Image (cartoon, rainbow over all chains, first blue to last red; front, side, top):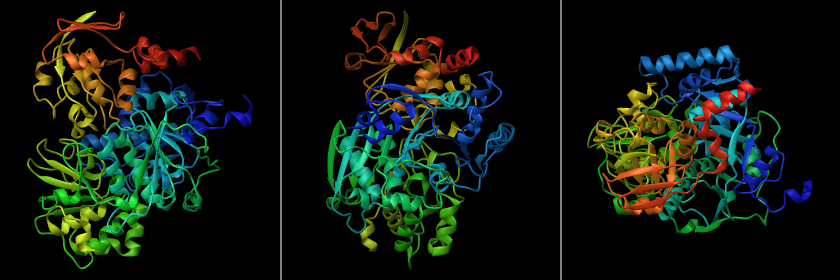
Length: 424
Length: 163
């Protein structure tokens, strides 16, 4: 096929992967590509052990590797400290230029901020929320530890070109309703495997209205739909956000008007209510009204899903002149140090601290149950994170509810699950 | 062909209940991982599972985190295969990459119950039991090379040696 013809009728994913493979590709095909960026975090310690088994001394493309310490930062015990130490030593030994220590933030916020997540790029990461970078028009997907080690050695990975589900968005979100509510509604309506193995394109007249932060939330949550990658076509907003951040040139691509989509869903944003995912699955979703009044012990505002400036500010608007309920521990974790410093500058952190929130170092915090706010048996947490699986944040008999930062703040004030519009 | 007992579970068995997050960033040998296998779903599992046993589950098995221990702990516990309606995509990749058979077969999931004895015949692509014989979907050709090499690490090692 000729060069022009080859790119007719393709989705964004087919175009990005086709350019990388150096040929016309379509959904279903298995290709081998050299990624632009390979992400890992604290799990690099385990990846290094696998890499050593391969019998090669050096990683093949050190400049493509990005390592961000974020899961347990600073280290909470000797084992984690040893992991971090071995990663720092490996970074020095291999001459890996892009290493972010415990004072950077969550990888899924740091890679966009630091200009690695760019339109048209292929990014693989040994973390399931790697699809986040689709918010900026990249193809980004999660992989395992062994294949990360092998990709370090070979600079290659096999990928199946996914089919694409398009979600057409129209209308405007009403006050008190956010991108998080949309993602929960989608997963509640269609189940946690609604997009298993597939790409998800957020499109339609309202897609462009979402801020880059909100796009990161939706692309992040596409992982909870089972998606291989989730994305927004890059637009003027994307390019503006990348000014002064992009680490190099990039080529922005979008799906062709006649591209093949396996499924198309339509959602009117104006019809959405605040949503809550109830224990113990992300697709057990109800309108906040159905669970309002449920007492909570802890509220978590942060994570790679909802720890950005606009999230902290949405929470601060509710906390303004109010206090965290005496029976609630409210933890706030800015997604990155950039967000932390910005929230200091705008005053959002002062409002949160004055309200009685506990502000923690940028990182994953208690989201995955490793430190900083583990739940005891019988305790209930409402969190802005992305997973509420049994035992994830601590005891197997604890409960996690997922919601937007506004619902989280309202819940912290009320001491029980509360509709954020109560405090509008 | 080898025989095992069925451990039956439902839909959306996630990586947090297969291998809890509280252990994820502790580096431990596979035998130690096996002690925590399915800890938050079925506390009986780790103590009673026998080499050759088979997990039979519903749709979207292994959803959630990319943690490879969710495959490694079951493999170390002696599980010879997982039969499900469907697998979450990273789990599917990890299983192939670590050399654990992941088989899709709706009929087997519909019929088999906890404790049933099954024989797996990979050559014929069959699951045999007193409850019936079920054919599973053949694995994609592209990944058979990796499985045959004993996992991605061995596959890559051989490839690098050739270069």
